[in-house]
Image (tube, rainbow, N blue to C red; front, top):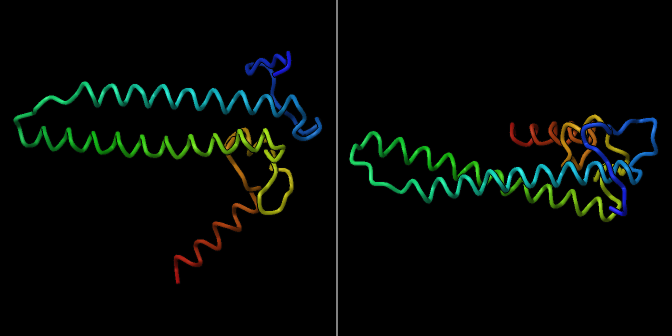
Length: 140
């Protein structure tokens, strides 16, 4: 950002600051970008492994085991793809000034929650309410 140099190792957002000030936004932007880059790097390694590991395995049990491993890798990649979409959405919310605020109530999301789950879009209370409603619908 415009000369704002934040060391992720030293700075930790805290409640005494104005919520989602420029420093906090930049902190979360950097954290999200670093997370996304890590996922992309891991995905590329997975693709390389899958491409390089196309050998023919004569033993049926070994082949079944390899196919299971591939299926797990592909499911992991799909989860990573979905996570990247959530990270991109969080980055957009930072740009739009909506990051850190609950989609349901509009209230600030607790900084501890954002530190643990930077892609959170609901406050803890709204998330718990959502999960309770989901559970009720599942049980019917």
